[in-house]
Image (cartoon, rainbow, N blue to C red; front, side):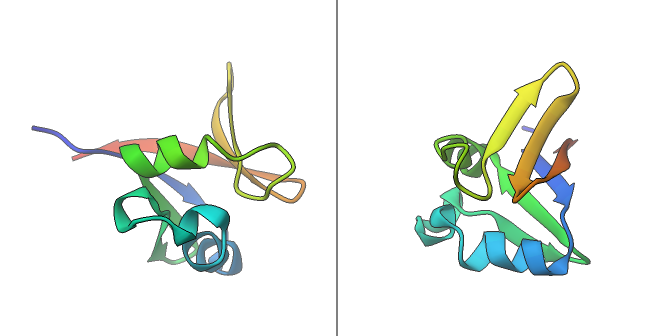
Length: 85
């Protein structure tokens, strides 16, 4: 059985913030973004579902369009890439 996760390079400060201070960082472990080092954040299927609940006015919200899946912090968008293992 494969596991799907999404990874984005957001910078060290943003990765730390998403993993420890964002609204989804306060949820149960399986619903939280994970700072995996080197300025990258990882989202599990459940974490992606939780972060999709954020509104556009909140940092860390997700958009998905023809150009892909992105996480937004302030005015900056960071591409999320699917990783299957």
